[in-house]
Image (cartoon, rainbow, N blue to C red):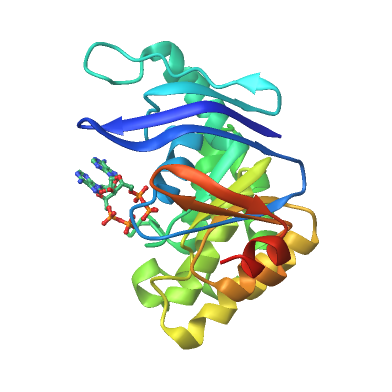
Length: 238
Ligand code: ADP
Ligand code: ADP
């Protein structure tokens, strides 16, 4: 599903990702753990070109991700077109939810399908309502994000990611910004998705999730994956 070869990212002479090789299979749930600053978030962000890698290859579903840049390091037009494809294949859920504050819950969820995938509005709304029901928020569809709890906002963000019908969803510390009593609301949805066979890559400090839900755990340090294996293998040595 995702193939990463020799992926590196250098920020101002600092190597943040150091020749990463990684394969993620369809239906696999991979948790990435490790200390702050290890490069976990940068690795996820490179997978959908929120960060442009310095070198290396990424392919998604056997298609190479092109990230040609101009002299200022900006993606070129050619890459921008591929970017639209990539962002619909590889959706992301952020620590800080990143919902559009001036759009309602429903508008947040249909925006991607309507503008990027050109899905007719009625069809997108019907789909969005199903997804919002799935995350338990059907009664909130006309609310604005500011009127929702953090747990509710993150569930909207998950519905928004799912609305793109992605091949894989990346989660960047999805529960770290939540009050402790709301964490389970989001984890429950993630466990459900994992059970349905969604391919997921999750940067997390939730060790119970990493241990009990993931198929594989990666431990990152200093821009490298220093341990990789089944949860029981990785946790017995750390
Ligand atoms: P983690 O997610 O493991 O905490 P990050 O990927 O966020 O690690 O960051 C890895 C390193 O890269 C850190 O030293 C961070 O300061 C640096 N970094 C991340 N983003 C940028 C950026 N846009 N510009 C410069 N340095 C960055
Ligand atoms: P997080 O803890 O969620 O990884 P950070 O505080 O590390 O967030 O980074 C917040 C934002 O700032 C990110 O977009 C990251 O890419 C950027 N960033 C992080 N470190 C640096 C840095 N040293 N220089 C410039 N930008 C950075």
